[in-house]
Length: 130
Image (cartoon, rainbow, N blue to C red; front, side, top):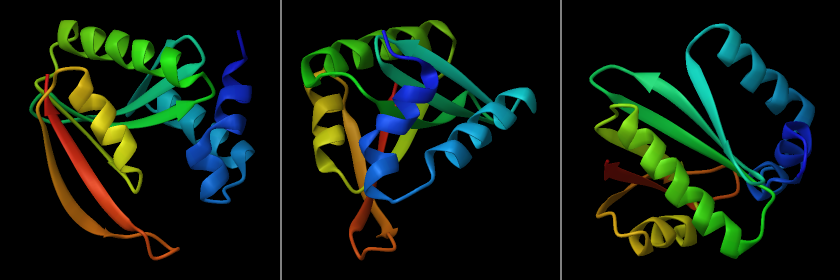
């Protein structure tokens, strides 16, 4: 099993955006200390969730696991979010495969375009009622 630092470092989202993984990791740690976010782990995948009003959370995924395990990990996160009392979870990505994966888990995903990233790619918001 990889360290949480290695998961952030090897995450496709961090690599693709050209972010400094150390700064991302520091931001994650600070947000947990400030009690604005929580982190869940399953395998070599981290789910970083921002706590919002009305039982809603914004999620960010850091994955350094295989595709097969990633799907299993996302199922575990969905169960944990449901047990935690969240009613709605959303995430933003340019990668429609992540949204399609959530659909394969059996959750209806509401998808909307919310803008473009620095590289001109369309950003989608996928919202799931847990």
